Amino acid sequence: MGFFKSMSISSSGLSAQRLRMNTLSANLANANTTRTDEGGPYRRRDVVFTANPTGSPFEDFLNGTHGAQLSEVKVADIHQDTKEPRRVYDPTHADADSDGYVEMPNIQVMTEMVNMITATRAYEANATAINEAKQMAVKSLEIGR
Image 1 (tube, rainbow, N blue to C red):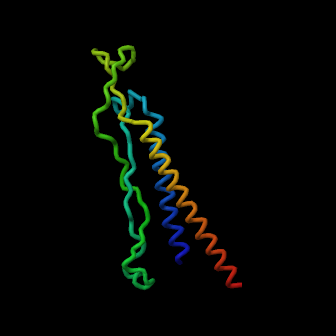
Image 2 (cartoon, helix red, strand yellow):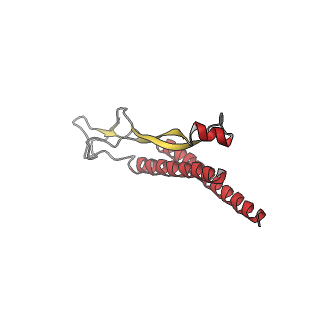
Image 3 (cartoon, rainbow, N blue to C red):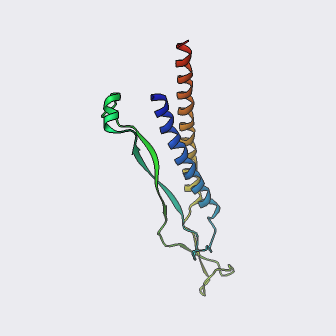
């Protein structure tokens, strides 16, 4: 049962980090998008995670794991940035206002790249945890032969 629970927890982390990487990719791809369907420049998005307890208190008590509650990663929300867009002077731009300013997304490429590296590392850590749990399960089966 412990192998499956650890795989379930790690797979929830994989799913969450994959969504985070997709959202960060969208932010990077739209770093210079000044016009969207909603109107105005693209708004940066960020994934909000929450811990979702696995099992029930009774199940944890029976398993001897009460007090050390295990949690899966769940996506609580995809938050859209509410800050005012950056104003950049570019009178030649098609979306420039009468003063020559263009509203640009509040996306810092370096920050998004650092977040992408962090998400990639977390994804790799969860994949490694799944592989290790799988190897432990295989070794347990070999011992039983």
